[in-house]
Image (spheres, rainbow, N blue to C red):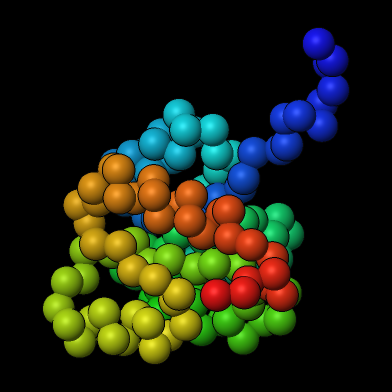
Length: 139
Ligand code: MN
């Protein structure tokens, strides 16, 4: 047996933007238990800086935030070439069809409704954090 660290790639990193403490703890705990590294923030302005600083593998975005609307955070993340490639998934209680369209139009790549289904949520996280590099997608 080798003690090669190369057999243990660094954990995928997920930035969670959520102002509700219970939701934040829930998302954070689910991800940590399943081997993800997390960065958390409760406001949108900090999220933009954190995304540039850490370039996480995935961003989870609450739409109702205390400072900047989540849709505006999405627009800013997708307007910045440094953060544009990072998969961005809204996690929100908004449930109306018009809300979904608004969220996707703001630049979010996907949408998960609260309350989350843990198995579906983890499958979504895995799908986005294991996405093949651009250029290697052949179908
Ligand atoms: Mn909120």
